[in-house]
Image (cartoon, rainbow, N blue to C red; front, side, top):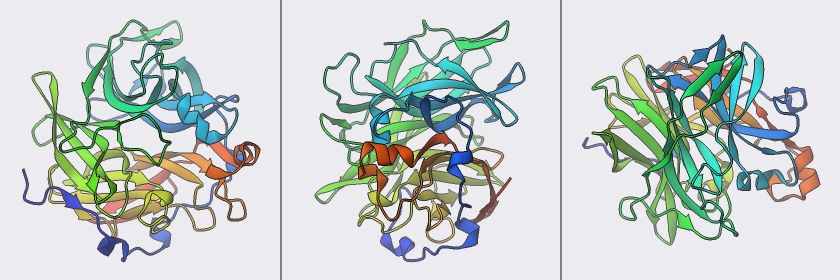
Length: 376
């Protein structure tokens, strides 16, 4: 273990934060965005990757996944119905390929974000978050990391995952290094975390890892952390965290690592209302860099900020993911409405301001610990 682990994201770093063109996304024209599924919201997109990290292509289409739910009621309620959707992408054209898994296949009551890797034997390892328990009458917030490894079928224009694959729990928070994510009550943004598994193969030694959004104890609450797990002999074991945000933020979501020019870039996203105090910093993509997977890490751009929503549209996008080619994908979230926080607005008002579609792709430039963002 490196002497630098875990890295700590502190108020001292946030004091260096400034809104600049290099770290600010352009304003999105949300109504102009195409809806892949007219009657469903889509969010948290991620590619199915080959083992070298590249986006997997079959029959001329890139393979992607995203969370989906019927576009009904308050957008915040979508998390209670979330299913993983399989998607195809050819240039700017998206194709809906249906739910990734059969009804009732997941051990949870809903499916939350993860990552997916296409294996040489024709299967796809889908690592995702099972939330709650299958068949529960009252939704709970128990979170665990599941692997399903279905065969990928491409036949006569059809692309699907075989529905008979086993869904196997591979990781849960241990209650020691990481708080147990097993709450009976709560809501997104106000619960402990053990979710969003991001797969990573370290080019230094070829070992496979999972990065997980986790929680550790902090004073009278909990703090966001990025957990690391390593696979050995087919089993996953938890390691100490790569990053903790004591007193700064309690939710470091969608953690992932990209290696570029011999630097390891650790990225995650978080929302303005999960900072301590709320709105201490903007909703954005944040990151740290190191010369090895285990650190020591230092914050990018001094503060950790890599990409933020513009101040006039503070919630326009979220759930960014940096691909190995440094393109950045995310989804369109809420348009600004005269200072109203649409998360707590009435269902009709919130629905009218919600994107629920894949956001325009951005491009990241990396130069050591300095970054800038722009259009592709």
